[in-house]
Structures are given as structure tokens and as C-alpha cells.
Image 1 (cartoon, rainbow, N blue to C red):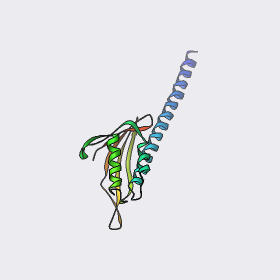
Image 2: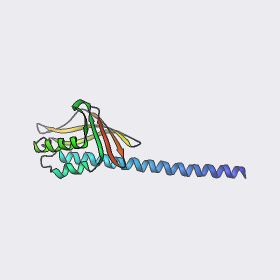
Image 3: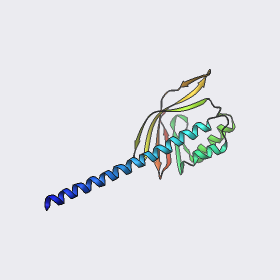
Length: 152
């Protein structure tokens, strides 16, 4: 009887651990979907014909208390600061279509975070030129991006 109880306990642990692993994979997949959407929407905004609604679509992916941290370009920005920066760049013609792609070179998905190595592909003299690799850390909360930390 004792062996049967131990065996049943082991089977139960296996079933529960498989369920937890599947839940973690599903969670990682959902974060990856948000990340892909973020880059897809940014690429759309970077085009010369982008509209204010395209910026709004990006910000729908962010939490209300979202932060953007980029020490090389001024430090920490609130959600509102970053939104106004996007709008200003769009109005001033900063989004001119010169960025033609954002190439994901590598990513590591963790618990509520994804570290990304990416490069921007730009048009120069009629040719596609891949920029230097850049590292970005995305932190998530409740299925939305809570913080982006740029390490370039």
C-alpha cells in the first residue's frame, strides 16, 4: 500500500509540474506576441506616412505607469514624456521611412521580462544597411509592457 501511495504521489507531482511548465510556456508566448507587436507598430510609425493613431497603438501596449529608460539619451522618461517625443518626431518629419526593418538577432524570455538583441535596418544610398546590435530589456506586468530599458 505504501508503494502505491508513493507512486500516486509521484504521478501527481509529474502532472502538476507539466501543467506549470505549460503555463510558463504559454505565458512566455504571450509576452513574445506583445514584443513582436511592439516592434511591428514601431516600424509602422517610423514610416513617412504614419499617423498619430499609429503612435496611440504602440502606447496601448504599455501599462499606465510605464517607464522608458535610456541613459545614453537622457535617462528616465514617463509614459507621457515618451508619447510627446513620438508625436514631436512625427510632426517634425523625424519618421521618414529610412528605417526599413527592425531585425531581432536574439532574445531571452524570462519571467515577465524579455532581453532583446536587435539592429535597425536603414536605407542608405538605395541599399539596406544593418546597424550595430543593440540590447533592450522589456519588463511586463499583466500582459503589458511596464518598462523598457535600453542598453545602447
